[in-house]
Image 1 (cartoon, rainbow, N blue to C red):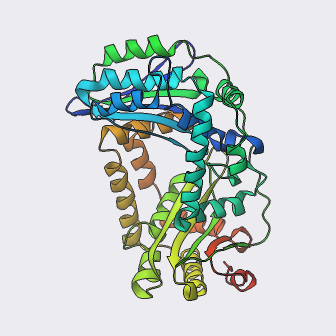
Image 2: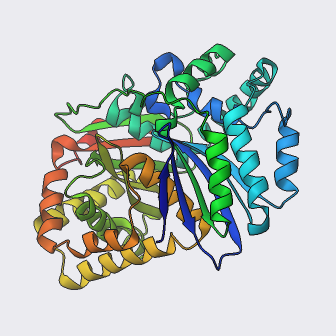
Image 3: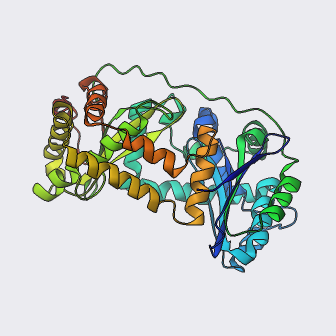
Length: 423
């Protein structure tokens, strides 16, 4: 992946990813901040601020003015807030790159944060919270993270925040958060696709040179203290029981980061993975089951998620645990190891096919890792993983005292489920 990183005098980083044969371009602005940078009373502020950036600037005073201009060039645009990053982007036909860059830069740099718009947006965000509460398949992840990290730690709180916070935020709160977290050193501007490189870079330097230097915002490190397996049930009437079973794992840049990626692929990525084969194909316990990883600068987690019939909850948990024990006890075969590596490398290549994909990858890795990771570099680290490495990491992570099980469904008794958590 060809890319060029330029650091402005104020510390803001620009990464250009040219694709001369592309017919589109993506403008993406990312800030290394999110819900883990909030205190309890601020929880939900980062996400609320993301919404407010689309509500008007001095040059484009209304949300309609912004959206009409982007719609008028056929742009696909949006934003997202995570626990450790927030981004704003627009994907457009290559001939409209200058318009897209101007609009996205404008909302990022010049949002007015009108008090009347803040008042109106409270209702929209509360409805967003309600929407996700009605989606157990999505909200079970929040239940799991609260169980894993605890309510007192920012990583254990939701990105959307509680309704009482949403109703209390003022324009002053947003301004303080902006000053603390939206600094030049904490911002990456990425353009990927077909675009005039010199012209785009000149505009970025002109527009973003005024971003305050600032400092990187502090966050509360996470220190694990779990000593026993844990279960938490959110008792709710649902048509299907949602579960997440997992453990704390490794942060970014850990020496076994890609061993764990291979392990996760063997267990639960793809329709030939062990969990899909055993839980769905052989036993018919779930339609949906997958394994996944989440990584932060100081911690991370491995998780298995599934949706099952209420009466099959115990069978499903028992089957998942059986597979975790098996991968600890026996090394994966050479054929299975090769398949997992090739799947991982192939999926990565597919995920970097479009300008939008490349912009997301470049901005995220530069924001979180301080460098743009290349496809070739990742592949070499995946290729270096051995069957012994996979077994060693499985034995390190899958221990009884590290297990956590979160559930949403019409269940009340945690003790019988705890008895199944034996690694």
